[in-house]
Length: 257
Length: 257
DNA sequence: CATAATCCATAACGTAAGGTTAGAGTCAAG
DNA sequence: CTTGACTCTAACCTTACGTTATGGATTATG
Picture (cartoon, rainbow over the protein chains, first blue to last red):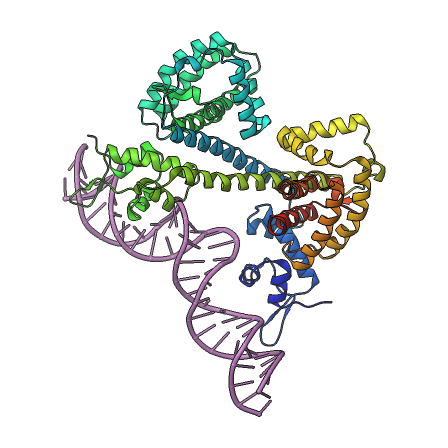
């Protein structure tokens, strides 16, 4: 049975000595024994436990949770993993939104906020352009995301989009004028609910109510991804897009269930 | 010109009073003026500035960075956004890996570590199974990720995989026996370099050297995603897979450039 | 065997971005 | 004139360690 000093264990495990001290102090990993002088000595069992600790740490579990996982025999690991998965998925989604917003912001800065020609916007794009746009989008955000948005879009015919955006433009302008700050604000959410009602009319109530909430939240993603939806005075507004997407998500989560 | 108290500003901005105190203290957002009694009063300019602050905060910038962004007129915003994008992309990738690992771990726990039949593994899978597997994988990880892995895989013919895995099995077994702890350990990296040499033989040096490093790191992802690559005694080892993927990435980053 | 070089221990402070009291002063309304 | 709502500063709590600081223990070398 091998014995390891703090330094040895730290080295083979790739953690700092301080980390081992900390884990000892909080009861996560106690040395198997101490020398007369109080030196920590770890055995193979401790090495194995450390290996497990590092695995769960790598999965972004908090140290206290790891404590429970390893020490409580009744701990429902599958449940913990699943809820952890949900949290990670949320982070992932959030990061994806941020990445798109950053791209749009960079684009705006580069173009010096150059105005886009209105005729490029809501009429059928020239096919090559549309194709190029799609490919670029896939390149940047992955086909998964793009396809999801496209499904969103396909629910709306061209004319519907034209009508929709005219009515929505007003609401968006009002929201924009509100100095878009807190997406949970009741005034903001009131406007969003109008927005939702208009949107719903054009989705032609497809019967099932559950996908609607999701689709509406997904619309926010579309706003972030496609600058054409958040033009104010023909200028793209990434900050506003980010705000709107959060407002829609919040609305769909709180009001629509 | 409207004036806001801390509470009012906090409410319309959706932040806590403490946050405003903090921003004041660190010079990120000073009130426009103070009353005789020392109460903070904010104007519209401050509201606008707060709006910008929250935008960058939402993009996960540190408060100090936001300070620079807003106060330094020479600040290279595009550059900052780009490097920030790289960081976010790394986080995203990491989270994706963790999600797959969690899935595999859950699967293992559910199956009670049931053995997989060896004939299911490296021989051509029955078509339906392969299709089902692929669809499931797309469902879980997105078509982007799956296609990337498939491109990895397509570089190897069936026979090559068979040979490859036989030779690699040995190395992996040795790595496994090393109590897979620190992927940066020189002994570990030595084994990885052997692993790399073997792998490289079968990739038949496609000329360009840059994609090789990336492809090799991508192989680690494949290990994580497909349990069949990290079977030890016919049992999937998600922890070991995670370890290996990090070791490969580290190797490709430090040794291959 | 003395001494220098490591190694180890505990302790305490610092980090980011606030949350959470605590104690005390300020303001408008009843 | 007191109540209640609001404000101020100050100080400690959080995570998961990193970073000294100080002093004792062990080992290597001359």
